[in-house]
Length: 369
Image (cartoon, rainbow, N blue to C red; front, side, top):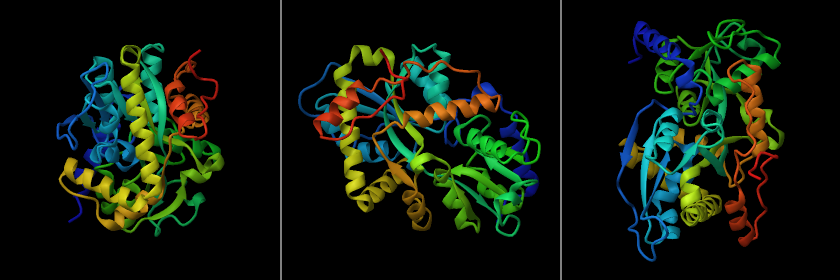
């Protein structure tokens, strides 16, 4: 049964009222609490590296497929030998950045907005982006009875996950490109931008409170299963149809102290990505098995299949697109001009890629000197 309209509106209002400081770092998450994932899929065996353990954070989300599959299949653990993986799942970017800053995790899979925010807040001392992980997987889905063309979006109520998050910034930029005006803080203007937690959005759509949503997978495919239609795939707005949705970051302190462990995790990531791209059907099943383990239930096939299809797994951090996303945040008034020089340290990744005979990744001039 659809949620009562008043209940949904209270949920949307509560999300919209959250302060920008807490939300500006949020990626495509589903809340703000961390959950311990203590189940080790593969036992640590072999020679121990310079640390007994490495603590890895990620979201139980398909855009974090590298972590889902790499931990589920033991690919990352294999490269670490006797150094044990301890993994923790998060529901939003701010809590993962807080955990990294507090030393509760060492390495994290996370979106571009929290990566930028965490780097700038620490004045370049807290973290480094050391690899890419995923591209794409974001769509504008709409009620086809109310919106039939892109121009029909004007005057409608469209959800984004959170104020200042990656999808929110992308939608605000798209609105600006259309020549429409919206106040970035309130979301009011030629389009009503409704900041709605991804868990709330499907109920709000069903109840009629929303006309559509600019959201990541699998929320987009969930809405399509509810009768929405894809009006725009964000990848079509980017050169080569690629843009970063998930990075791998590391605590600068941990990188300095344990470069061998960081390199081993990256070897595991590259191996995982190679397997995912070589056998996407088995990898999809593995990712869904991991989601079932973490959340208690797998994604239905009608949601899993299109969601998986729209996400590209890649080692490339797509640095130029992160620079562009930061510029969109500045233009929207959600971020002061950041100094991102040094945010990337791709040396360890490129060493691995070179050994594998793969093209090296570039940092768009934002790498460490």
